[in-house]
Length: 349
Ligand code: NAP
Ligand code: ZN
Image (tube, rainbow, N blue to C red; front, side):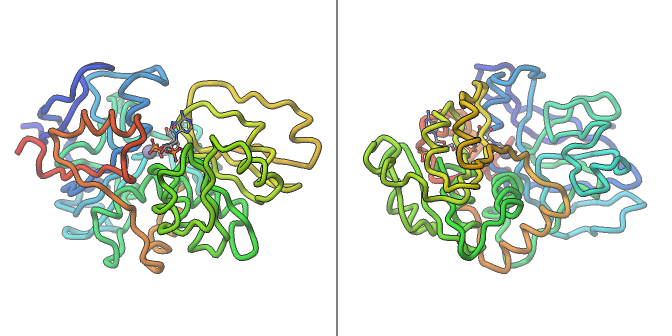
């Protein structure tokens, strides 16, 4: 009998989620079975389900911000045991042998990496993600969630946390640096918390002033409405690092103007439009336009430990399975404060 688990699946790009029985593979030697407690809703789930990036496979169970407890282990498992608190992020497999894997960048595996959903696995099946009660993954891709972190507020760290932590570390956010986080959503709010905990002085840039009080509570010392031309003008030439988390098209040059000489604008938001930047805008003051894609396994564990040490979890709104369709619309409308997390016990229950 194949193992099945209740899950939410999108039948197509614009249909509501349905409850299905999803097949999970039998445990291989190095596999673990996880009872998922919570799963976050990332804007990437929405881009993928709505086929904004192409290559969508339906029915699709998204979800790559997974937190739960180990329910069973394969015979060769050494890293985890039944009862351990674990998380799974955006990846579930990689070759483990190429230069990228060895350097801790499993997301760039040349085989290539297997992402948690909507991706061909090495056995030819299409991966199905965490909007489900259970998942089976190779033990290497399960991270340890420290006891100090609640599973609910830890779930979003597996994508929103690492995706903002990684570029902040790479570009040196810390004491003496000024960081601006653009877009105060799921990724953005984590970027503010993490940059502040790293010791940087943090500003937030949002479409309006609506999130000003929240931003301050998250660790921002200055909130700028991008719609306020004079405030944007006053902020010119003031940041060492701009972390752009916006899910939609942006006027890049307007933000690059806010960088100090030698500053970096690192983009993690993934709209499908092109960046429009004249070379002179970068060349003039040695500016860097960069991108960043999640983070490797070792750095994800480092981020979870950092969050436990600094008491950082995501700011979440808990929802049930029947609220996911509305939640998608709310995320797109910018109404979420600041990450929806699904209580997976409500799936098929
Ligand atoms: P989110 O919660 O929807 O946050 C995006 C924020 O962007 C919103 O809160 C809003 O902030 C701002 N925004 C939205 N529409 C805008 C518009 N038309 N103009 C200007 N600002 C707008 O999404 P998320 O989950 O944080 O994901 C953000 C992006 O990162 C998505 O494109 C996602 O696919 C991508 N992503 C990338 C990676 C990676 O590895 N690089 C990983 C995960 C996600 P304000 O209300 O403050 O203006
Ligand atoms: Zn994500």
